[in-house]
Length: 151
Image (cartoon, rainbow, N blue to C red):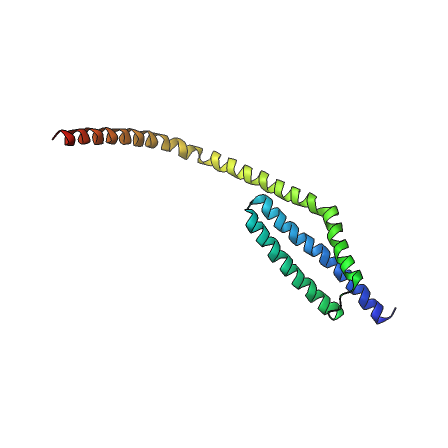
């Protein structure tokens, strides 16, 4: 096999791998969005930045591997890597990681509530006393206000 054919095969493989990498990075964004939902404008901004960075990285790969010459088969390999990743791993991985995070976060909150239970029970008398003092102060304020109006 000639060096030129070997180089083209490496370029094809690099394009395919970059498709996998791009989609795995986009899945990281999708997981972040499921864990921390954000407004449409921020999501759109993330997408624009993602695709700009992705485009620059793919251009660098094309420049390094094939001297900047875009080949049709490299674009097809890139898209094939993206689609294969999405169909094989993408949606399942996003659901799995987001689900594990939700369950872990839910358990963390439950443990925190359980651990602070004694502290909250100790604070109950303080809360009750605070309410009594607040009620007494309102009564005093009302009495003072009435007394001031009559003088």
